[in-house]
Picture 1 (cartoon, rainbow, N blue to C red):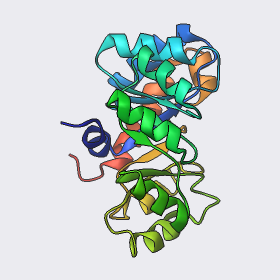
Picture 2 (picture 1 turned 120 degrees about the vertical axis):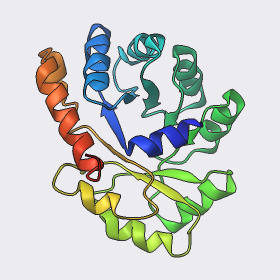
Picture 3 (picture 1 turned 90 degrees about the vertical axis):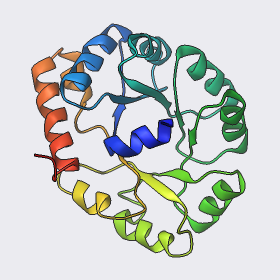
Length: 210
């Protein structure tokens, strides 16, 4: 099973910002306990690479790196154990370096021109970011008309109130968000609170499950 197939099955990609790598294990524990063993740890902090390594070494969480802007950061993320790479925009150097490492790239694309650029790079899945200010689910539906083979992972401005709107779009592969892994809960080591938020998110993303 490919990495992208696994992400699609989970339907949710928790976007994580960790200030302290020591919190990575607690976060991973909460994700597994909540039924969502997936994490996109963003390279926005000095702790990110070590946090990715800690989670990757567990072997029970599908961990990727987010906010990857350069080819060098791709190298850093993959060396730490990232199994996929997410970028806010589409940059050829990043996509090509991911291909060299054999890990999927999810670059950001919110316009027809950006989607075409991603297609030319051989991609069939992109991050739709920032979703909330780029037209939301309606914009993804519009892009799906000319780009029927492209799948989208919308991120930004998504939460319990509008999650269903995005998941109802056939070309949405999964939805990214941080509402189920808020940094303050992680910093407070509130494992029970995190598990509750994660479990609720999973239930909302899979309403047909018993």
